[in-house]
Length: 418
Image 1 (cartoon, rainbow, N blue to C red):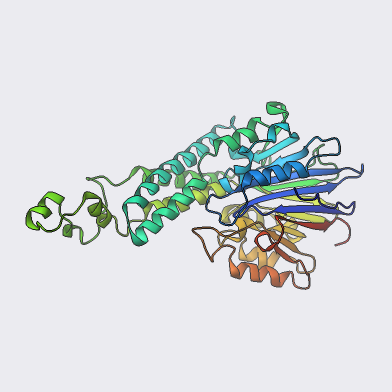
Image 2 (tube, rainbow, N blue to C red):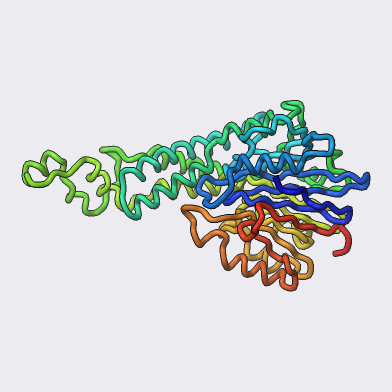
């Protein structure tokens, strides 16, 4: 195991773990009583990650890092930004049942007592399962670009599956089981979204998303219905969308009768009939975006430090935050930014980067890594370059987990000065 981070009474120590394509951060926050509080934000990696450690080893390292001198692992707050595999898969691994946790936070869409949350979750999970099954089947029966699109769709859909074992830990696990308080955020009362909790003395919490705006929720619901429609329309003999040259494909018996020297298998006909059909990929991308839309966006205000953790939040959440007068002013104060969605193109709006972030005291971290399916596109080169320009003058202005020699990197974020 690796050495524990060196802690300071004047800074929050952030340990970012290299998980591959995924997120995992452990924060050590100094308090006025002299004890550091521990916040764990996500623990997961995508199955498409390459050259990445076993997530079970990462989970064990986190538990070791959270273990106090008396041999007991304690984490004051566990946050799961959303249920995607690359954010929660580590919670299905052994060892968490011995960890003492004071509170667990999840997005409001995880609340089992909220009918609207249950409805959205069911739609998204059902869609992911249907698309995953259909895309895997298509990948076996097609060639070329269609096969590549189907494989990409299966990978995306896999990330959005229920991840039931990990979510069971978050909803009912850890040493305290169901007795541990669970918060599903943000609150229904907008004025309650800036608050303090006993588990984190001297910390102001600002929950900026996901939205509870009926219009935003309606967009998610409409999209979910579309995904379900697409998933249900798995090609059959009667409803398959065929290419322009469909009549060139003959039934095997008809073909064999005319051409004794060659036979055409039914699977070959299926491959011809589905050339250019990428409905599964479109559905998987839409469903991925919808689940990302449920990401918690949280800012921790600790002394002079303003630490922004947006999970994989996409445009809807960002737009709502940037257009909210109070949140807009807080975003301008960001001294630390966990780069959204591993540096993907569909997070971190241009306006946030170019018009809101201050250039005089800004540090960012990207928990990211190469994948089998999305090579050379994540993290987005233009985004990383722009963030580096904003953080110019700092030796560690933008830090990437995939560029470290160690399986983690530590960063101290000052709580004094600015």
